[in-house]
Length: 148
Image (cartoon, rainbow, N blue to C red; front, side, top):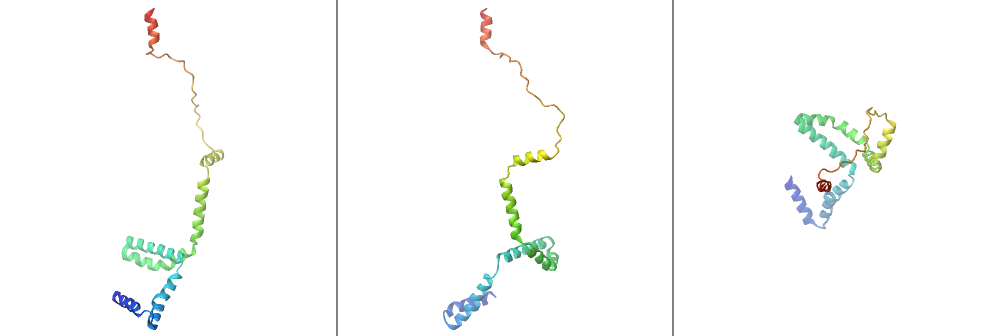
C-alpha cells in the first residue's frame, strides 16, 4: 500500500500542469482537502472521547472489551453527541468566575449567621494583670543592699 501511494505521489509530481496532472490533483488533493475542511471541532472531540473509552475498554478487558465497546458504540456516540459540550464549558467557566470573585470570609460569616452553631459552655479565658516581678539578676538592687 505504501508503494502504491508513493507511486501516485511521484505521478502527481511528475505530471505537473498537464490535463492528467490537473485531474489527479483534483481527485488526490482538492477533494480530500475539501472533505477534511468540513470536519468540525465537535466531531474531533467526539472521536477523541470515544477513542479514549475504546482504549480503556481494551486495556481493562482486552479483546472482550473491544467487543463490548463495538456493541455499545452507537449508544455511546448518541449520548456524547446529545450533550452540548459548550453549555457545560460555559457553566464551569461561570462557576470559576463567581468563585474567584467571592470573598470567602463573607461567605463564612453568612453561613455562620444562618446555620446553628454549637458553642462550648466553657468560659473563655481572660488575661488577668499579674503583678510585676523584679528580675532576679538586677545588679542595681544588690549594689544598694551591699553598700548599706
